[in-house]
Length: 126
Image (cartoon, rainbow, N blue to C red; front, top):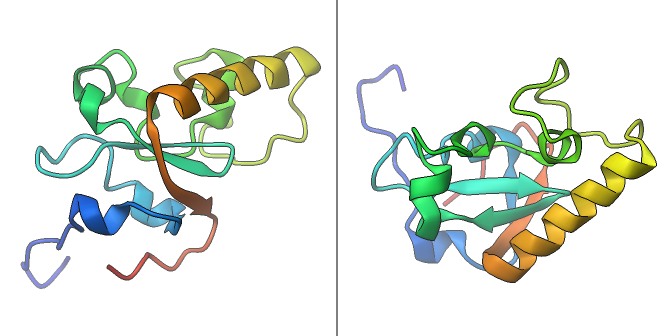
């Protein structure tokens, strides 16, 4: 914020539930803020991976996936793709879609889904 005021982070209670999380708002939950949640988007769903910040936080082996929709990264089993940031999945191969579905099932089993990801540029109101 240009006013010098600290960015107000939502509480974990406010994040939970069937909420819509905008792509822009989700970026601030990449593990760089020690007191904020660590979130990852997969196929339109947002998962709270904070319990494994050692893996998904800054410096963790999967930290590059947090704070964004990681669907294409997971589908392509890549740390970075030329189309990083794209959320469409229409051009993925059958093998990539199968891989993505397997990752989605793993996240759904291990982590709490706290809402859905929307492409809206308007950040959530906390």
